[in-house]
Every structure is written in C-alpha cells, then in structure tokens.
Amino acid sequence: MLRQGGIADTFYLVRSGRFEERGDSDEPRVLRTIGRGEGFSGYGLLEAARRTATVRAATRGEVYTLDKGSMTVPAHGEDGHGDGR
Image (cartoon, rainbow, N blue to C red; front, side, top):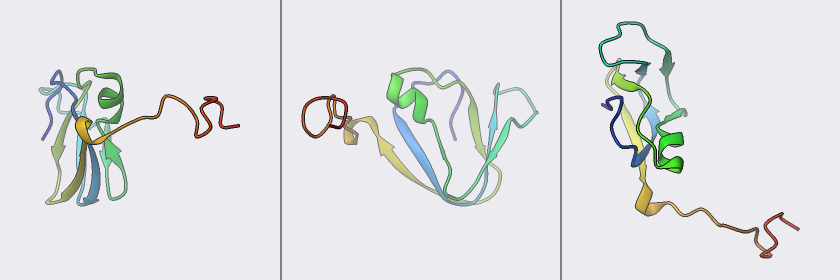
C-alpha cells in the first residue's frame, strides 16, 4: 500500500481490516499491526517528510484518506493568542 521512502502526502485511517507496518520493504518482520480506528502516515504528512515505513494490507480492508490539500492547521488559537486563552 505504502512504500518506505515515498513522499507522505496522505493520512490513512483504517475503517476495516488489518495492515502491517514494516521498517524496510524487504524486511519480513512486522513492526506493528494497524487495525480499525488506527491511522498511519500522519507524521510525514504534518512534517512534509518521507515515509519511514512500508505498510501492506494483511487482510482485505478499507481506509479513509485525508490528503495534505484538505488539511489545514491553525497557526493560532481561536482568539489569536496561540495559547487558547
């Protein structure tokens, strides 16, 4: 699904199924299993970084996606102070 080293431009939230995160695309060891309600590729999206892991589907599943163009992060709090006052 995702390859390590690729540009992170989308966040994925698992709707159903299981996905496996691996530290290297050739590494057979699973670093973590990602299931319903969990997400992946968020850090790279926020930091405009490359993906640090490969993610593969372990079972049939569905994900919701949020791409960088749809995401906005406010620079300040609602009142403009930046600290939520």
